[in-house]
Length: 513
View 1 (cartoon, rainbow, N blue to C red):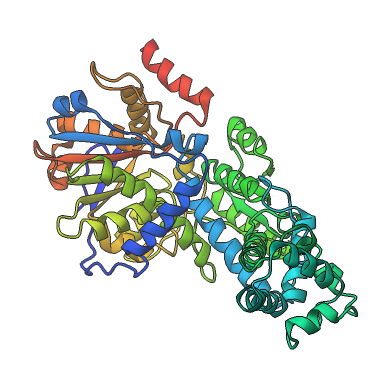
View 2 (spheres, one colour; view 1 turned 135 degrees about the horizontal axis):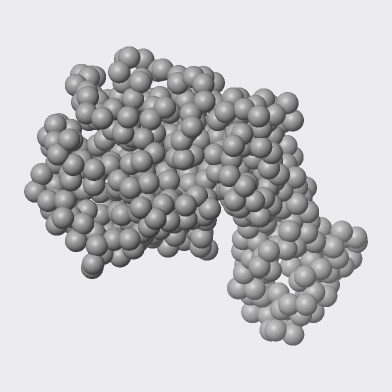
């Protein structure tokens, strides 16, 4: 069912799909925990605030309104790094695993000295130890163990033994202690036990040395940032702003490179914000969807890795990982609500990756009392709304002139299409005026509520809720969504003022009226 009131501002489509929800298996507690643990391991991680707008809720006649302020996420002014960082972590690990399977065991990389853990010399030395010592070091420890047990040698004898061993230890595996002391022919022993010359070779120290070598070698192998990796991993993406910034940030953290393509008309502030993170940025002459295709072709041509947040035929693994990265945002919110469960959740969508990830988490975790989820889009870029209306994936062609740059997408992600069609209860499209209303209401709240800086794509759901609850012209829509005095509403302000110039224009326009 669709409402017909002032369609230029809000249109609501109650989901006509009758198929039961079948959540993909990837939505499970083990995955949520693994993803969130990864995010928590990042130096800049901390949960973003969940703000209760008590005064606004009272004015609108609902029980509670909570909004999660993602402008604080990793200092990037938007939520997107949750998806990009997790997807990049997964891709790097998978590619390294493939490389190890198809290459010699030696670590042939010059390792960047990071926090003193592993220098290039250390990585090389540890490779030599790994390849040349192996069983020899363990056998040597056993020989020393035997000396300690059978001969009860003194510290002085151990030292003497070390000096002899530095000249010859080739026969240590098969000889008695006496034969080891008598032999002096192994020219490789000095290299193999260079470090052993400076330490007392007791059973305990030999074992400890072996453990340290193995541990350090493992650290050198798993170290994420090497010069080779920085060169080998080059990521490419298309963006309206926030996703590209997230990819640039994650790539910089991984020591990799990033190429970011942006559609025509992109705000200069968004372009410069991405460049500031070290990425190569190019503004194309295309719309968003064509820019995605251009980025994919560029990555393929140059042998780079596409890091796109929308899935299409033949490309779903990385977009799915990006989608799942957003579950951290939802899990934080539910914890912060401290037992009070949302009855209504409004999720803005461009290609639908964030909406799919957050909705999937909520419908899985709150399966005994699931919320009413509405997907909110910019009018003119309503590919999900149109797909639901037509019962199939529907591309919105042409240009869309909207201030909601992050939602200005013409095609739904193949990854989340079925999930959205089965899980959402309503699909809503809004004009720019609804977003602008949300920006102003959040920036200049009622007495007692905390002000929130929310950008064009972040504030649209707040503007929608205000209009639905306050304007009697939308009473039918309000009833369709079941909004009433018992409603607990959860919103996500997905960005701050990512276009500061337009943000000030929107706020000042209200002041001038």
